[in-house]
Image (cartoon, rainbow, N blue to C red):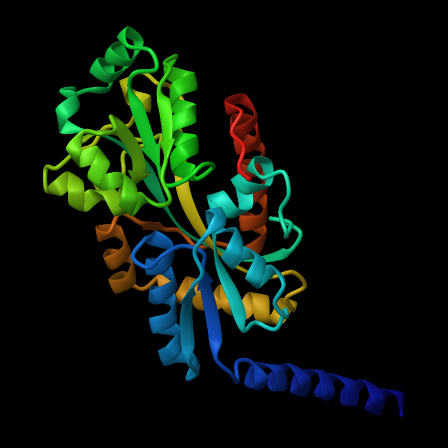
Length: 321
């Protein structure tokens, strides 16, 4: 009798697992992007959606919910049911910077989410107005030191990775440059091209068209090693700012308490998609470097990044309402 009970329990467990595999997904999956269409988070969401739709045979919808430094979309996902039907493209801003930047958040950047997989990263790149008349990092630093607080750097908003890259640059280069926050990168770029602002850190993936069109001067990328997407652009680290590193990274997140089987199924799907040669080539050509991994690797990385950027936010004195 005991043997029959054990066999029955095993069969029931296998059937339950198989049933769960069939049950999820059975409805539309929403991937929330906390920023406007066209940027790196949106690109990644649409790459996943296109590939998953073929594999899962359900509708995959990308929903852009921009605003408040990514907090609007993040809050929506944090408060969603943990059933695998509402996901978030996580960012360094949402999960590693905003917790230190905002005095009050309606969600916890770590506790209210289930990490699924790292997606990709892109270096930030320091680009300057051609009207500034500098062609190297050395020239820029010399000019900034000669004219303290006269040069300006734009950003896509206070506390974004773009802003924090500028603050890290000020600290490591020993210069005083005024920060000019915009509501988004699209608003800052015309002012950079026209010379109304001196410089800007931007995601390499977003800045490449301007750089290739020779509308701005690229002085350096913010990774320790040169980017495969633009190997001709030197790093800031190799030009004297030893150890300078500030990347924009993106992840796939679910609400807290997402069931382990769904978490791992989504992780598997993500790794399969980002491992396809045609997908990797598309992302690399756009300045994004795909690097999917385990949920545990992602959780550890978020903790390290949170510790790093908390210090930079505190040193800069940056605050957001």
